Figure 1: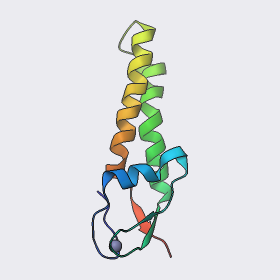
Figure 2: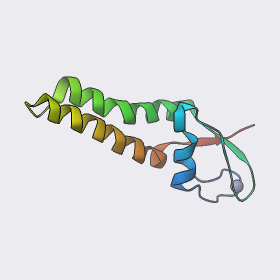
Figure 3: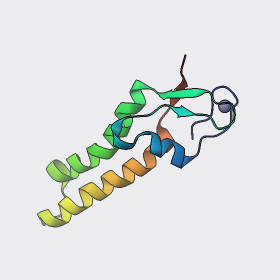
Figure 4: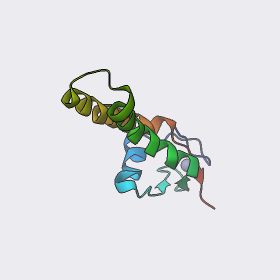
Length: 96
Ligand SMILES: [Zn+2]
């Protein structure tokens, strides 16, 4: 999980998750020292990939089920899981 680049205090999951709501990627502020952090460009792409790729892969390529309704239910579910895990992998940088 991301830490503050200034004081090393940990950002919690909720704080990071909330920052990428509506795809706006709000900069996050450290509770401890108030340093502003912005998501890196690479992490933005990661969030998008983790949320969208599973849906895409399940929907169009890998569908392990013959039933299109099952496949179209699991794809989005994987997308949601990917999205929920995204706060663990995204990286933020101290804003200058
Ligand atoms: Zn800090």
